[in-house]
Length: 306
Ligand code: AMP
Image (cartoon, rainbow, N blue to C red; front, top):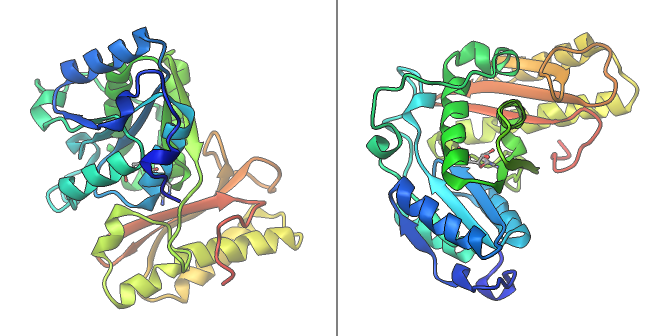
């Protein structure tokens, strides 16, 4: 899946051949403005690092579509609540840099926290209706932290195409809506979920899963698969699908279900009956890791065969 440098889309300046790492907003802006002034299309891939093939798929997509790709690695304190894993969040900048370069990234922005937040944060972006349900209930400050840092990254990158994973479906809807509401000159592009061989969605937090918890993590994607199969077999009642998903989690003692939801794919509001544009989402705590997963109610693409 990962493209090597020889497969990269050629660009006018060939600037993408040698990746540059910068730590300041000014350097990133100057570099991207210069590229744009030469006619380059800019791609942006925001991440928190500790990269895996899910991140690589975003960078590969960006490199295929754009002339200059900037990846950012920033573990954003604003999106972690007290007691969450900000301090423990895994990091490996050396390996990440290598993967970025291999994927065709031209510019890697790794800003320190005081570069992104030189002052106590007074201004935040709140996409309230989309951010309120589901993860917004368990993590009430999370999406404002995400939307705020992504708004900053959009302002740093300037006009661009920005790539996000469908793995974080609610986040993707929050960001899409924010870009539209605030007229950012950014095309937000969602990319499919990349999974491990057993169907578990790749996540930097999977590193927290040891032994039985890693096996139990399969319950998320397998539950989604069972729900999609039931819908394909004719079930249209959201309540029946939620019951089915809840029962699958009840049978896995190592997983503590947070939510199993059937929602409109754009608004995140509960829907019943299940028609078009419906998303199934699950979130669960497995020991030290909080995991999420989701799928189109009418597609088993990528999901395991149970
Ligand atoms: P993170 O580093 O976890 O903040 O994720 C950075 C970006 O990678 C976000 O847009 C995520 O949705 C995306 N991403 C994370 N995991 C996956 C995955 N398994 N497949 C596709 N995209 C992913």
